[in-house]
Image (cartoon, rainbow, N blue to C red; front, side, top):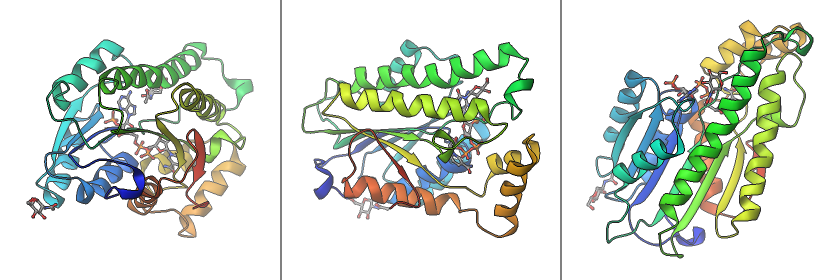
Length: 268
Ligand SMILES: NC(=O)c1ccc[n+]([C@@H]2O[C@H](COP(=O)([O-])OP(=O)(O)OC[C@H]3O[C@@H](n4cnc5c(N)ncnc54)[C@H](OP(=O)(O)O)[C@@H]3O)[C@@H](O)[C@H]2O)c1
Ligand SMILES: *[C@@H]1O[C@H](CO)[C@@H](O)[C@H](O)[C@H]1NC(C)=O
Ligand SMILES: CC(=O)N[C@H]1CO[C@H](CO)[C@@H](O)[C@@H]1O
């Protein structure tokens, strides 16, 4: 991701990664670390201070020239103004030297209740799930675009959304997760249509060997889906997070995707 094909200019990078405390988000940070020019800032957002501290240590070890900044924040409750203030404070917006490129990775996510729609009687959970998982993305995009709108036009601004096969395929007893991912896919397509100068990508990382998969294979109500998830693990078909994160970074570096497009790990 050294530039060139991606149309970026020289200079440090501004990067925001949500859900950087563990799993795929931590892997994105580690994959990015060796690519970051001197003076770059990597903002990791999550609720767990301990997880963020671990990611910070890993990034610093790989590349001491870049600064990892832990932002302990709950995306459910953070307002656009909270997010904008944090970005301005930590990215040094307004300084005379603009970044070479500015990236945000919308990676934070949760499965929500894994039960059949016919049994979904906790309406508070359903409405908070959609409200939080969709509107938190709208708020962070608004904040990020306000902060980057002052940058010179030549600075590449990239917005990456971590999506799932579940946005395209119905997984029995995963109604909330599938629906939120499908809705978010359209949200990022609209964002791309509204802002032709942005590079927007929805990346589906594949089935990953991490905590979310443990929940998927133990707490899913539907037996068929639970069995599929369990056999992925048993047959060694789950991907290490860093393998998929590096593929994503390669896709970004090649910069050949259509803005707003959905690309799966197995496509590229
Ligand atoms: N695992 C898979 O097989 C798989 C497959 C396809 C897509 N994905 C997608 O990949 C992305 C990353 O998931 P993962 O597998 O790495 O899951 P994970 O290990 O459960 O990590 C989720 C991350 O999101 C953060 N997060 C959750 N709610 C948050 C909130 N309210 N505020 C701030 N941060 C929050 C968590 O941090 P804190 O708990 O510290 O806040 C954590 O860092 C998700 O969007 C997921 O849908 C995963
Ligand atoms: C850190 O910066 C120095 C000087 O610019 C450079 O020689 C070195 O390779 C950089 N280290 C990493 C890990 O990028
Ligand atoms: C990233 C994010 O906001 N995830 C939230 C989705 O909604 C559930 C609650 O309904 C939260 O627990 C997650 O943190």
